[in-house]
Length: 108
Ligand code: AMP
Image (cartoon, rainbow, N blue to C red):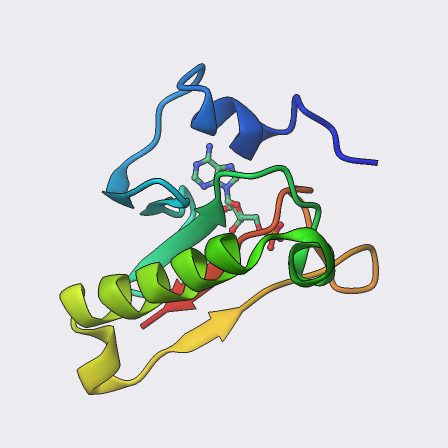
C-alpha cells in the first residue's frame, strides 16, 4: 500500500525542501541528503509508485518513457555518462529500501 506521506511524496508536494537538479512533467531529480559518492542524485517519478516493480507494472508507457529519458538527460548533464556510474533501485524489505516511493540512485 502506497503511503502518501512518505518523505519523497512530501518533497513532490513541496512540503519539505530538496536540492533539485532536474524536473519535468514526469520526474523530479534531487541530490541525496547523505551522498554515498561525489555525485549522488535520486530520480523519482511524479506518480505514486512503491518501487521499481510497481512502476514497471502500473505506470503508463508515457511515464516509463519520460522517466528513462530523464535519467539519460540527467546522467549526461552531470557528466555521469562519460565517466561511468551506478544506477540502483533498492526494493522492499530485503532490498533495503528506506523510502517507499520508487527512486533510482545515480552514483558517480
Ligand atoms: P533507499 O534506501 O533506496 O530507500 O534510499 C533512500 C535515500 O533517500 C537514502 O540514500 C537517503 O539518504 C535519501 N534521503 C532521505 N531523505 C532525504 C531527503 N529529505 N532529501 C534527499 N535525500 C533523502
